[in-house]
Image: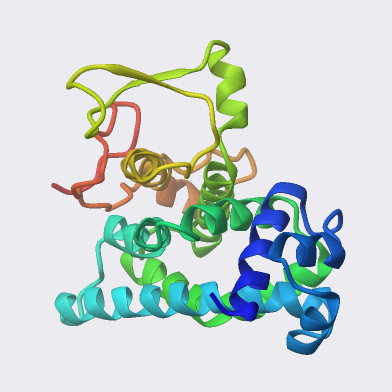
Length: 268
């Protein structure tokens, strides 16, 4: 492994565990087994190192997101893409990429989750720039897919989905608190017999099976939120009230949960 890669991997792991502010360059060099001059040579500063960590990951991620959306829009041949497929292309791609990278993927997932939930001004500006193109494309795809839903409402729901995803990939510490005695799931791996329960005490992303389980859970939750009835604000105009009564036309998909009677029905 090159000196550059050692620095990047060590920094990524330390940032994920300690945060950006608490991690020093000396800690990074000690973990990587290199001297401080090497960090200064390759990056010049901690901020430049942080940018490089995110840039190398986010460039691939956002390229694959755009490719996935291009594929969906081409298959739709001018028609709106189903919202559930749009969400899977955006959020599902993130988890599938992390799953492919067995070494660094899960660590970056948790780092990204932590960063999105505890962003500094420097990181916020940097991420806004990195995400600008891909967010614009997906935003327009959702607008086209949901023409009867107010655009402001779509933006709010996408905002909630980003937050839910960031919290989910940051780790399961709060989930452990809710479970009190730990999470037990039925799972089958090469080292476990069928039907045997395993108890999870670590954060998400410690093994690929957990990412496998997270994806359908998260997608069902996100699509369910997008299908929810529009809010009933007391200050709504009659026109907004009519929009509220219209169904959110979200066709079902392999990830789409069964809609309860209280929710707005989508097309079949």
